[in-house]
Every structure is written in C-alpha cells, then in structure tokens.
Image (cartoon, rainbow, N blue to C red; front, top):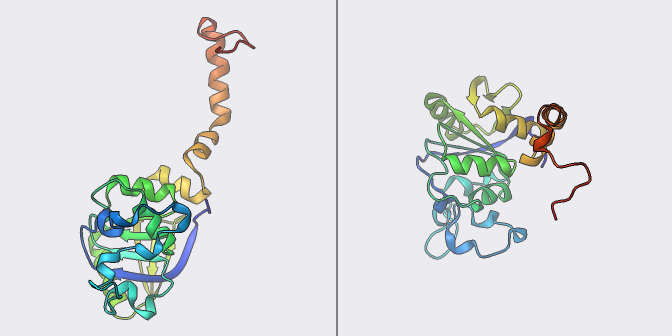
Length: 208
C-alpha cells in the first residue's frame, strides 16, 4: 500500500449527509472480480439517470472535477452495510481521501485498509469547505502528518484514529503494523519463557 503523507489534488463536493455503502456501490455491481475495478460504479444510481446516462449536474460528472482525488461530504458518510466494495469503488475511482464530519465505523476501517483516508472535519469546517468548492475552488491539500486541510487561504484541522494514521503514513497493513512491534514481541517472549518455562514447548517440538 502506498504511504499517504501530503495529498494535493482536485476536490469534489458532495453536499449530502448519510451517503451509505449501498449508494456508494449498488449491490448488483458487486459480482465482478476485484481485479476488474469498481470505479465505474461509484455512486452509480446518483450519477446516472434511469437510462444509464450520466447526469451532467451531479458533482462527480462535472468536467472541472475530473480526476478528483478528494471527496468532501456531510455527516455519516459510509453508513449502512459493511461491504468493502464501497471502499474499492472510491479507490478505483481515483479517490485517496474523504473529508466529512463523521463516518460509518466499518466503512472507515475498510477505507484505511485500502489506503483511503477518512478524515473527520468539524461540521462548520466541512460546510465552509463545501461552500468554497461550490463557489469554484478546486485544489485542496490534505496533510496527514500535520492533520490539516488547506483550501485557498483557509486551513482546518481534522481528526483520524492514531493507529489508522500510523498505518496510512507508512503504507502498512495490519500485519505490517504488528511486525513493527517485532522487537518488543520477541523481548516479551524471552522474558515470559524464563518466567514460565512450563508454558512453552521444548525447542524443536512440533504441534503434530
């Protein structure tokens, strides 16, 4: 997974609350393999009309938002079902960060495990940023090291779980995070083996 430090990218406003995982990717598109990519189905039923044609006024369809890497939404983003495909759709659609006042817990965990930053902005900051984008602002800078978001002359702090921040900064999976404590784990094992030798199998003994 690619480390996330500072991201300067076009941002897309999505002034909606309670965007759930069923909206992020409708279930009927989840039968395809992960390797085929899910980006084309991101927010499909909101972005397209009944005939499947893109709705020109939907934020993600606007030409000036093409290639956006940051999505800005309102509270409770990623609520609903636990489908990891919602994170796949965002990542495959080119997004590396979602900024919102709050997120669904399972969505947030899935996002981090796929290299996507769920950054929590205060509601007033989110509204200010949405207003700036809807007035024509484009590039936003997300600094995970400083935990700040900058847009034009404005700057706001954001919050993210410290363990998730560590994983994203280093591009680590859960296994990588565990292995970063390898020396401490080995030290504990040595001390514990000396203190409780009866709890350890003799060296070279297999488990059958």
